[in-house]
View 1 (cartoon, rainbow, N blue to C red):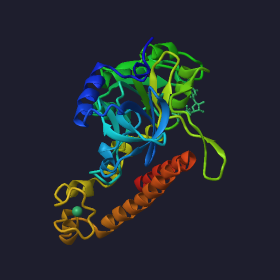
View 2: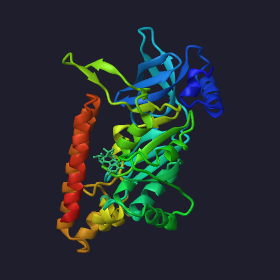
View 3: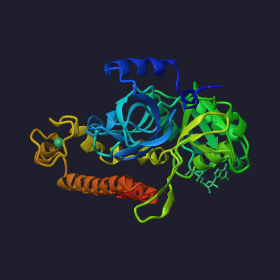
Length: 360
Ligand code: GDP
Ligand code: ZN
C-alpha cells in the first residue's frame, strides 16, 4: 500500500526538503506536510495524510506573490486546536507556471506549481498558430516544466500530419500528440504521458478543447482531490471548482482558473507590441515598477518632454493600465468570495479590453 503522500506526488526529494525545513522550524512534531489543492485567496485548501482541510497563510506569505503558495505547492502545516491549520512553510518548487500581471513587471503570480509536464493545446482550425505554440513552449520551459504539444480537433482537418510537421520544424525536440476530444481519438497516446504520481496541467487559448480533453481523461471516475461542497454566506450550497484532480491512472492535474486563463501575450496578439515603444523606454526608468506618472527619473515622461513620444500615446497607456488595474481589483475581490463565474467573466473582459487596444 502506498502512503497517501505518494498518491499526491510526494517523493524522496520533497521528503529531504521537508526534513530540512522542519528542522529549521524546531522539529515540532505537530508539523505535517500537505499539498495545496485549491486557492481561495487568504485561505488555501490543502490535502495530506489527514485528508482535506482549509489552511490559513501566515503574514510572511502575503507580501510577495512569488512566495505565496499556489495550487500544486507542497507546504508545511501547523495544525490548530480548533481543527484548522496554518501554512508555516513553502517547500522549494520544482517548476511553476507564472503569470506576469499586465504592465507590472515586478509582480509575478504563480498559477500552478510542481508540474512535471504541461500540455500546450492548440486546435487544428483557424486558431492554429505555430508562433503562439512556440511562445507557450518557451513559457513552460522557463517555468521548469516539460512541455508536450497537443493538436486537438484533428477531426476538422484532412491531414493532421501537415500540422505536426509544421510544429516539429520550429520545435524538433518536443513531443507532439494529435487528438480529437470529439471523436475520442489520440486520447490513449495522451494517457501514455500520465504516469501515476506525476502532475500535469493544460494550457492554450480558450476554446481549443482543454476541458474536453480533461473530461475524456477523467471519464466517470474523476476524483476531485480538491472538491469541496460548502455553504456560501447566503446559506446556499455551492460546489467549488475543482483545482487539483486525481485521474483514474493516478496522475494529478492542476486545473485552476489562472491556468485556464493563462495567455502568452506578445507578438501578433500581445500588449508589449501595442506599447512596445513605452515598454522599451521603461527599461531606462529609475524604478523597475515605474508607472510613468510622477516618479523621479522616468524615462518615458522624459521622452514625451523631449518630443520623442506623443503625449496621446502615454495617455492611452495610462488609460489601459487604469482599466486593467480596476479589473484586477474586482478579480481579487471575486477571488476572496471564491466567485468562479465572476472571475471568468472578468478574465474575458480583460481579454476584450486588450483586443480593443490592439485594434485601435
Ligand atoms: P477550452 O476552453 O480549451 O477548455 O475548450 P473546451 O473543452 O471548452 O472546448 C471548446 C469547444 O470545442 C466545445 O464546444 C467543444 O465541444 C469543442 N471541441 C473540443 N474538442 C473538440 C474536438 O476534438 N473536435 C471538435 N470538432 N470540437 C471540439
Ligand atoms: Zn517611467
